Length: 201
Ligand SMILES: *[C@@H]1O[C@H](CO)[C@@H](O)[C@H](O)[C@H]1NC(C)=O
Image 1: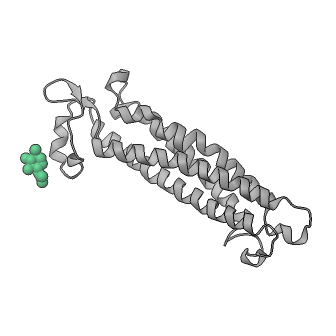
Image 2: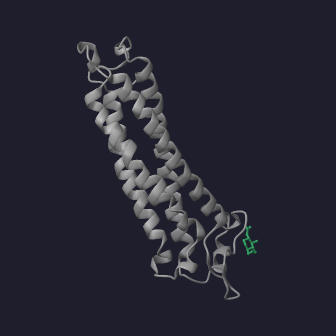
Image 3: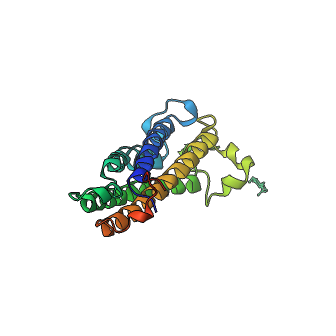
């Protein structure tokens, strides 16, 4: 099982994911690359799943995980005075925060993909023309969305990316939750054998 070195890798990976999720959410405010009034933007975009859940909220666990390298539970072996247990326990709390934030983003993206985008429909009114995700398997239905142009592939692509990236964040934070829990329990370093020499997996 991995310890501090592994946590550092997790932290480093979470940052670009958080940046990309934030970008994806920002792009969703410009459906099809167009500037639209706020009432023409899909409701789920306003839930800020990518910006808050997978973005801002993810910075805290990422930084905490990143800092764990210096608190490596393996380093504890040759070091009597260490608050490794506490450091690892803290990382579990932040891992849980990360799982909640990314989980929120994941659920919002899944709902948005199922529901489909808000757009100007064939009758000229603005709304959600698709139901039960039927448009996902039938591209001829996409003509129901007259404007903004390309709003269907735009939202579908960005929400799928958000879904995948927030899913990855949930997995990464879950790994650190388990890792940190083991580190907390093994704070006396009797588990040092479980970490490779350099603390990697
Ligand atoms: C796709 O939707 C169109 C328009 O409603 C419908 O005529 C067609 O049968 C659908 N095709 C499939 C494969 O469901």
